Image (cartoon, each protein chain N blue to C red):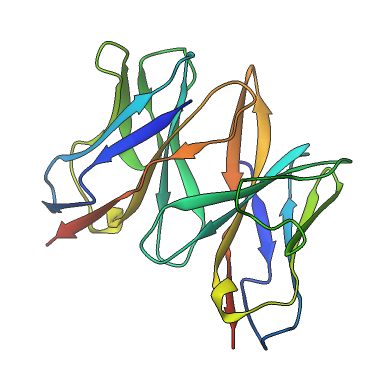
Length: 112
Length: 117
């Protein structure tokens, strides 16, 4: 069985500050890990994914995430927050031929 | 990137009627699509797995006679909410699986807002 825990249902940062959204996973097999972003009343957009290649994954919009097996973590970061980054972020885990299991989401607010 | 569309983007219907939602992969073929339901300020709940040419696999607690899924081609899956009631009002999102190298990635549609009066 797989599961994802996103620490913090709501994160608020100032514009230009570091963004850190935390995600820890549980998986009995090598996981595939994903971060998606959802803007209000829209579907999910893939930010980045880890699929057992490089542990530091770079995604769109300046986001990146690092897979740390020892910590079972896949935290999402961005050096400098922009107002347009305000959205809901979902971490998800899957394995070969299994559906995605989503975390509960973290709402990111960016303060001017 | 891979594009997935949904139609309609929103629909309002009367209680007791049926509503069909389409999910299309526009620039790739998808043998597998997923249907999710999302309540306000909550995460996505997987409803069913739609496989081209075979019956859908429903998650526990999801009524298969209530939510009919048809995956008639490699680019189209449909979800029909039969005899809709107000409690079926929700945001329905589909995703299509694209094989990229040795891994599968889900690409999501923009969602369909269903309101049942």
